[in-house]
Amino acid sequence: MQSLKVYSRDGCHLCELLMEELLPLVRGRLDVEICDIDSRPDWREKYDIRIPVVEFDNRPICQYSLDRPAISRLLESLSAESGE
Image (cartoon, rainbow, N blue to C red; front, side, top):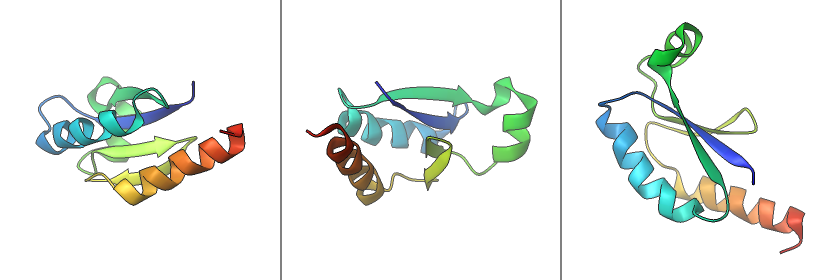
């Protein structure tokens, strides 16, 4: 199963809210990989206060809050590609 990457950090309220909204939307369709930006200096430098960031295939999908239409478009395109 393909996956989304969510760049976040522990204790980030916006990150927690985004995950609460995101998980039900993608459950069973995409895996979600949570990347703690404080675990790697390059992530911390790149994202620092820009979190949360959701990426798919190294492309940003949304930042700071969940972009439901963007997630819906992504899911629709993946369904079309797989012939569902």
